[in-house]
Amino acid sequence: LDLLTRVVLMISVLSEQVQMVQSRGSRGLRLTGATPAALSFSASQIFTNCDYFPAEFSLVATMKIQKLRQKANEYIFSVVKEGSDSLLLGLRISENRLHLLTTPPGAGGRSRISFKDVGLDDNSWHTMVLAVTGQYATLTINCGLPLDKQVRFFPSTLSTRGSRFFIGSRGRWRGRFSGLLRQLVLLPGSDATPRLCPNSEPGLAELSVPRVLKSTPLQLDHQRPVYPYEAEARVTVGNHPPCSEPEQGQLWLDALRKGLFICDGVTWRTLLQNKERLDYVEDYQDLFTRSETFDVEIFSIPSEGLFMAAANRYQSPPQWTDGSFQLYQNISTQEARAWKHFTISDMNFLVVADIRRAEPELSVIYRWNRRRRRFLRYQTLETHSAQDWEAFQIHNHSFLVVANHRRDSNHNIHSVIYRWNPDTKVTLVVPSAHLSSTSLILILSCLFLFDVWFLLLFNINSVPSCPHVESCSFILFIFEVNQTLSTSGAYDWEFFTVGPYHFLVVANTFDGQTTTISSTIYIWLDGRFWTFQNITVSVSSVSCL
Image 1: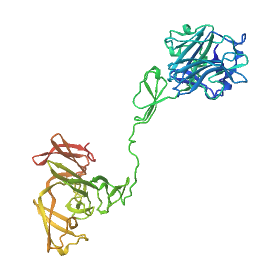
Image 2 (image 1 turned 135 degrees about the horizontal axis):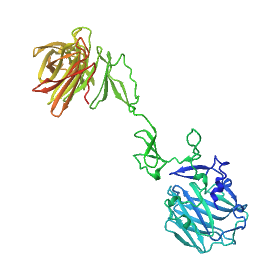
Image 3 (image 1 turned 135 degrees about the vertical axis):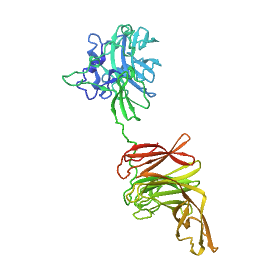
Image 4 (image 1 turned 180 degrees about the vertical axis):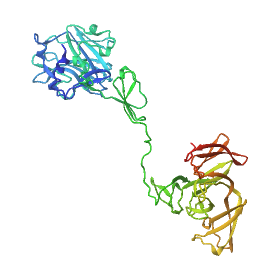
């Protein structure tokens, strides 16, 4: 007696309430959407010649249900007296247990046969056979070893007259079966186990499965297959999960690769996946500048925070405050092309590559003043359409190199490497009457060192004042010329190290005739840079990762 088939015949009417779901390659019915009364029928439809429930019988059920919480009880099926709502017989599942409930005639009360540790509620397919014969009840799960229970007595005269079968419930909303049901068969008079076992798929052993749960997809002309069922959407996340026959039809969401995959029983097939792109940069903050920006330098100063200097015509370095950059200091520049932050010992410097319309063209080094908490002008260096600065250290010596682009219309000029020399000092004697702790005093001076003229501009407020003496002496360290290198429209410098060797590479862009010219890699040997390799490139900038 195929009890489930009688429910399947109602699917055309109850298509919105009864769901056919495929899970791990097999289909079952989810009945929780329909009312209990809709999934019931009169007992007289199957007990046509006799009103009594058989004294010896087998119940075969194939189901799949998730872990049940404590004290939860769900009915696989029940026989209920109409009118009085009295339970005559019921097959009920709870956490790791299976129960057969009966109410024998007379005043004896309800009896229960319980099997413990059955493991049916583990979200896997299981086929169980419950056979009742004489004084014994035997439960066989997945063709395994049988579990026997001695029965006090099963009523031999359990009348079903005026009663109804409820599939997936006890006739009430509470206690409905929440899992998937694939087969439910009542076999009077014999043990059904030998008819099912042994079996290559014991969890899906079949005695009588409704045809609709085994049919192949409808194949219409020139169309894809039509599947009259839903797939159970169980999605796995995390690292690469296994994909084999038990996982067939399951989904895997790979958050790292941003893809959705389905297991075909052998491997994961792609359903949806983002194309690889540079999508790890998000718009975080928009900063207003007074003119076009050519370069951005981000740096930090201990105990002060994070700063950003943007190279444009009117400079204003912001500071990182409360999760965003805020305007911190205004610095006047002349068509600035680049900023470079560097440190020497515990001193912080900023150097700007300026382009001025008249001689001399000067780029400026600024030094961080701890007392004023501002960048103050420290030293000026003559440059020619400077495009870039690079700062580096070799054997505890600090260097600066400038990319001189052109002088007037001549692109074939020298770019200069400067070295910080603590042994070279400039001493300035200034009358104290000219000093003020609140005013900004600038001194313009010329210095002749190593056959090179320097134009120096110093900010006196960057050192302590001495108002109680007739004059003050200031000892200032400066950058001096270390080496000049011939370049052609230099646009960018990069310094890098390979093992024990130090290299400096320049990006040349134009020699007055063509933009396809050689850029040069220099190597540090014997206290200076020597040509190491020439590489022919087009207009570009260089970078070393």
